[in-house]
Image (cartoon, rainbow, N blue to C red; front, side):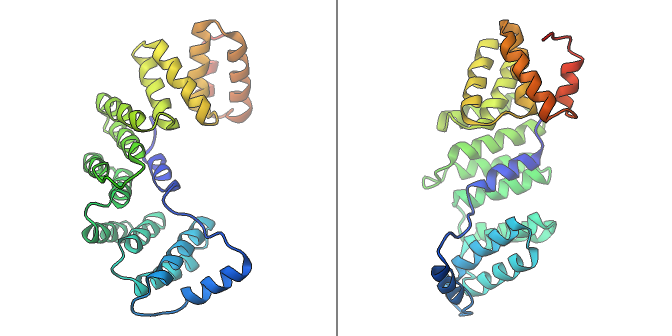
Length: 262
């Protein structure tokens, strides 16, 4: 079963990005960013991106400085409050994170990104049912382009309840919106395998392998599928990779106890 932390990693991978510019452009951006005006959305946007970038690099103090400056420069921006909420969720201040997500939503009640991010946060806090409500609200935003990811996140959250049938429905919707989503494909492959729908499991696994690198979970499932199909070459190569890269994983332990021959 996947942990809620995996949902968090998925949710923010495509939302924030580091500034990419030449030295002269960076100097100009820094001059703009450090301008503490009562209303300066351009500077606020630069600072929130810098803040998230510093956070991703582990520079907590500079990240907080930039994000608080962005809040002073554009306190009416939902993205600024969303970014501050993300900062506090990553640095362990759950109360402030919750407060600031709700502030961002109050400023933009239908914004799919913020609704998805708050759902991610709630799922990480074990509030699974409430989180799914926010994921479902996110997909109703016609301007939200990563609908599949919101459904995928909702499916991961449903697995934590656990409600596998609901998760299956949500993963199916995720793949209808984006057939390349690795996590949804892997989860559906696992579900199909457990339901003895082996042909379906192989199809989902093939799509997973086409769009993601193997991990311990995917290798162990692929070993079992290949073994059932009599594909000993795939079994041998997967076992070797599982042993080399994940020798302490529960999946490798399961393989050693499975009786599968290579």
